Amino acid sequence: MSLRTILRALGVGILMIAAAHLAPILVALVREPAAKDAYLFSAAVSGLAGGGLYVIGGRRRRADDLREAILFICLWWVIAPLFAAAPFALTGATPAAAAFESLSALTTTGAWLSETAARESPAGVMWRATLQWVGGLATLAFAAAVLVRPLFVGIETVPPRFARREDNSYFTAMQTALGYLAPAYGALTAIGAIILAVAGFDALGSIATAMSLASSGGFLVDADALDAPSLAVAGALFPLLLVGGVNFALIAAVADNARPRRADSETAAYFLIVIALAAALWAFGAPTDGQAEGEPWRHILNAASLASTNAVVIGDVPNLALALIAVVIGGSAVSTAGGLKVLRWLVLFRRVREELARLVSPRAVFGRPFVEVELGVWMHFIAFTFVLAGLTVIGLAGGAEFDLAAAGAVGALANAGPALALVEGGEMGYGAFKNGAHLAALAGAMVLGRIEAIAALALFNLSFWRS
Image (cartoon, rainbow, N blue to C red):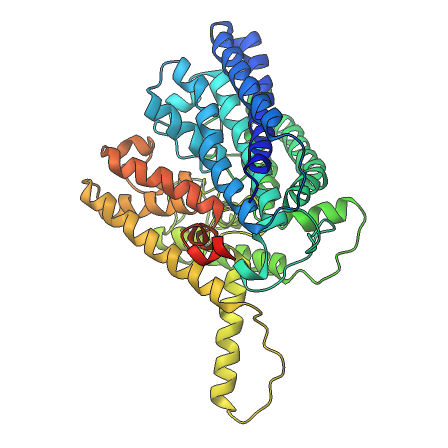
């Protein structure tokens, strides 16, 4: 294992955080001059630290392996939020609160301690949205280059053009993934911002909201935008909410006029889930006061928001069980959405179908099984379930009601922080949880949701390091 390779990659990641300061600095210069010094100082610190690590890392002289890639991903999700927390700390937040806010933003969870405070500062709004956008891009690159492998998800999904071969570097694959996915990701965000501006959002609101929703962050600058939106606003929000759960490797391929080499059953399943969820929300939910029952677009919008783990909803709170289940299912494997991911559910259900077929016809010959690597899928499912249960128990021990504790656990682990607002008492933010140990556990769950439980388990497996 080469420590210098990891340090070099961390340096690049922290330099990305330094560059991300440009957006809030520009907003501060125009609308909040008193805040610009905090962002300038933070950018300088991140730039010096990132540049120093890059220089110390030197040039890569040897091929890296999966161990180095996973260790780097884990370290980046822990270290990068510490640098991103500086502007929050310099503008009045406690160190612990600043770290929680930056981690929530960078993991695209959107679990703010105070929903009101998160929208008070224009520069702070842009910083949160920018961190979510950068975190979404990192999520795509990590997933496409490292985490979406049969070892972790059971089968091969649509292979991107930069899919790593055994003789290539994981870090080179990440770099190529960034270059391949960033144009499509940025273009979709820009188009979304323009559409929102046409629908009536102001400049800050349209840009920040587009950046957040495209990254599945669920952060709307105007907190009341979904209380009673017009059809035009809903139409502007829908594509941004939906695209967060779509396979970005497929989107990039379409944008590049390249035909995918494999049928993408996962994205088709994702769209079917959105449609089925919309029907279920309509069937099991009451119409909002003053709304006609003949407005199915509201349920479709909510379904897209929940399935992509943006988790912001229109009007009255939908059926809580359906909403949390949708968030846990998650989006596509190479997407900014959290949750268990549709691909793993396809693996589990098709495995169940195979076993049922064998029970019905035990002497039949079925050929090659659909599932290539089943153990990783089951391990991830079990780990996700146990962590979710543990977080709920910790919340109950910290004094929270069951619904609030469960929604907070799902929101953190599935990187869908706004899901907390679906429960009474959670509308104002994660500050509703008063126990420090509980908040620390939720912060850890946000990271775990991004690095994938099965990859995190590998870190504690001695044979993984010895191999």
